[in-house]
Image 1 (tube, helix red, strand yellow):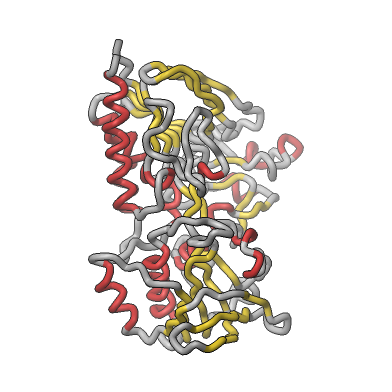
Image 2 (image 1 turned 180 degrees about the horizontal axis):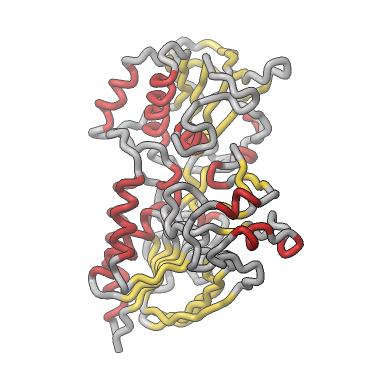
Length: 416
């Protein structure tokens, strides 16, 4: 008997693609996302390369596909707790965490105006703060506020409840569980930026003026923590001398073995961000090799015309100057065979793409490689990885991979 229902776990670009493709092919789809919004890392990116266009237009097209398709049921703030059964007949337990805001929310923002509590803004990687009740970002889908239960003072405060004329806030909401029966599962939980705290020779994430490449994306965004202005976190000054360090925590047996495939292009793109704001900035890229494949070679050549210094060598150590909080980068320049010790106002680490499955495994029997990526041909038929849970990649390759996963899942739903 056919079971043409598919569970997609992860609401980033891979999960959204898999869900919409499967639903438009006639399947019922449950799309599960742990955050309060869909879009994943793509929603945090400032611009795509090489066209340098914002991602929100592409996301909005997909959100419209979801809105118009009654076969897709979106479950945000949701987590898969267990999976049992087999291909064509999986029972999946899903925990639905409380939003504390119901469907009456109009996004009027009156609740945040009266909220007295602040929290670190995880969407902006802690570079700024929000109130305890907040909208994740201006283009959030669904466009509903959410309360951080760890920060909120609850009923002892209740100012947001009083301010909401639409009765959209319920501080008594509790977590719920639900069980769905599906024929196939697509695991598309995406990636996390490799944790700078693990790179001890680069300061272990302690230095204020050292940020990751994904943090740079938020800083360069007009909707980001600085309104698009690239500044030093320590004193909000414009960096005059900036270094980009490639392969930070990746292509390294001590950290992550895999090449993340997109970091070189992301850095070249971010060089453009800096140049647009400060044409006279002194920019250096520390690299092992620049991987700008195929059509991206032209983009690489154009960036190199903008007086960017290249030091071929992976820094052995980065230290902080306690007098001004500048960063001192120690490296060997393989071009000149010299040891260089140079000081910068700010350093951007091209941290690798670590799969979310490296830390949060699928609650079923599957195979992983040394870095935590799902390996093709899992021992549990009917469960398929998609996008960056299988391998590092850019948006285009992730969309292609998710479409392939949707096709495999559809085939699983019709097997007897």
